[in-house]
Length: 389
Image (tube, rainbow, N blue to C red):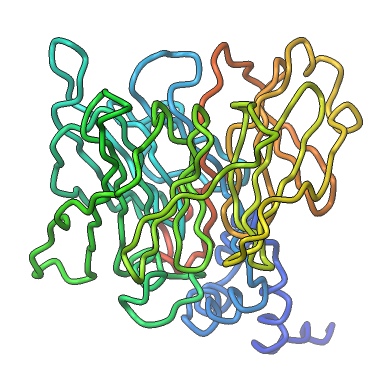
């Protein structure tokens, strides 16, 4: 009779499982389905804490974009991993909503009601957690002709203690709305309103009163995805030479001039791990990275130039590639839309990856969704249905 197979100790199994790549959460689901003891181990809070601490940076599970090729108000979730949103939307599309921002495991959805002239009458917002499918509607705002918004963990503003943002999706949330008072660039005023959502549904929640900027808003026809650097949220306006900055702690507004040499509208803004604000620009077949030290008056400096012809296939250059977004978490990942589909460029490794084969007639902003997804996140069975296993 053969001797019984040796039993792996839980400690040994855990050391193996925490090394599973977070960008492929289906592997942990497979392990949890292998046997009851592994399922119990993976579902423990201790395992999730160790798993997050071991990998440190949340992976990109997918990205969101507004109506690729459809020309109507809808948000599409494009997976870049084995994760899938649990609700069975057709092709992962949310109708009647645009994505406004994504950060700290939260997605901010936006809908505008228009009058007969096409002017906004009302802004509606909803914070969505794709892993749990929890949705939280925010109070509506009066219409603002030109606007943008950002979502983040409230702790980033010092409102709810400290947080490393690895596992705070269900915690207090902050939304920053920036808009203008009208259509006249010479007479308009730029304003900010802030919404704080606590973790307790019993607390009354509302938007703050408008805080107006003394500086004219210039041309805010379009606001691309924002960037969070320390306690400052930055909005970049492609049609002006201005970056709008709002300090979450002091509640002060100011402007940061863009590099004077830049007139290109194909730009993205991101914060680096070493505390710099970085502006990414595509011109012809070159990707230029301009950086600015936080809190300095030294201005912008051209830090790096990337030759895209060395990274992308020839089919991508029928027209000039267009930068449409960046991962705002220090991972240095940017998104490019080309005639051959959508690519990510990892500025650290220099690797280009096609993440969507669809070629777009019109560039649309892309928002990376970064989060950890483990079987213990929302129970044992739900993640199974939310993954492509």
